[in-house]
Image (tube, rainbow, N blue to C red):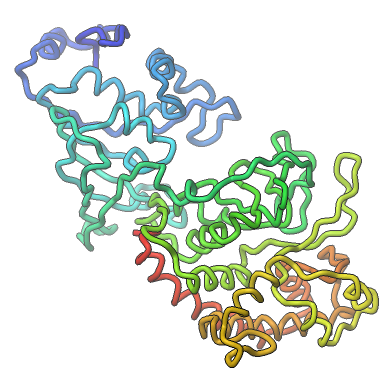
Length: 469
C-alpha cells in the first residue's frame, strides 16, 4: 500500500506510484471502510549466511531503520513486523479490519514483546488455526501452527488483555476443537524465573556430554562461582524443546547459564517442565510460564529425580581436559548416590575402587540425602525413606541396579570411547557404555517403566501449576 499521511514520528512513507489513482484517492478518504488481507513474508535480515528464512539484507529497508530508531529491537529485522508497523501507521483508528495468515509468534514469542507493547495493540475478533503441514512441500515432522486471525484496527487494546481463542482444523478442514493462545508478558516466562549468575571463570565449553568445543567462533566458555553444571534452556517454547539439556561444563551456544546451589531447584524444575510434555504442531509456539504459586517440596524432588535419569541429562566426568593451554578436571556433580553406599558395591576396576578412598560426595547425592533425612527416624532406611514419592523411589531403585551393573562390568566396557576415567561418571557415560556392550537390557526396560510412571505423575502437575497450558 502507498503512503497517505506522514507518520507522526516524522517518517514519510514514500508513495507507491504504481497504485491506480482511484486507490490513492480512496486511501486519503477517512470515511471508507477497509478490509486488509495479507499473508506477510517471514524473511529476516541476518548478518550471517543466507539460509532458509534468514537472508542477508532482505529486510534492510527504510521501515526497518525507522523501527530500529524507535527502539523496537530485534523485531524490526523481520519483514513481517515491518508490514505490521506500516499498516498500523496508515490504518490505526480508521474503520479497518486486518485478516492475517501467519505464524502466531507475534501473539506470544519472546522477541516480539516490543511489537506487542508498541505496535500491535488491536482488538481480536475471531480466527482459526491449522497445521503448517497442510502446505505442499512442508515437513510434517517439524509442523507448527498457522493462524488466520481477524483484528479490528479501530480499537486499541493490548493483546495481553484479550483471550485469543481459535478454532482448530485438521488437514481435512474438519474442526477438531478450540485452543486458547495466551499472550502473556515475557517477564512471566519460565526462563525469567531463575537467576542467572555472572559467569567469569574460564572453563572448557561442551557441545554434548563429552565433546569439548574449542573451535567455535562464538563459544561461551565461562562459568559462575560454585558451578555445578550448565542448563541450556534459553528458548522458552516447545519449538526448541529438543535443545534443552544440562551438562557438566558451559554449553558452547548462547542461552545456557550456570547451575549453582542457589538456583539448583528452580533449574531442575525448568528442565523437567520443558522436557516432560510432548511437543505437537499445535503447542509448538506455546510458552512455558512461571509457576502460579509456591511449588511443593515433593514436586521439586520428583522433577530432580526424573531429570537425573533422562536422556537430556548430559552430565559427565572428564579427566585432564586440555583447553587453551590449561588442563581442567570436569567433575560430575550430579552423581546421585552417596559414597558410603557405592563403597559397598562390587567395583571391578582397581584404580576406580582405590580413588573412592579419597573421594567426596557429590552435590546431588548430598541434596537427595538431606531431603531423605527429613523423614522421621522410624521411617528412615539406609537408602531412601518413603518421604520420596513411590514413583521417585522406584526410579532411583531401578537406577541403582544399573549403576551397580556398571561398576561391576567396568573391565568389559570401552571406557576410552566414552572418556571414562574417574569414579563419578555421568549418567550419559554409564548408559552409553553399558548399551555399547549390550548389557542391562532388562534393567534399562525396568528403569524406563519407572521413569515413565514418574513422568505421568508430573505432567498434570505442570498444568496445575500453570507452567504449561
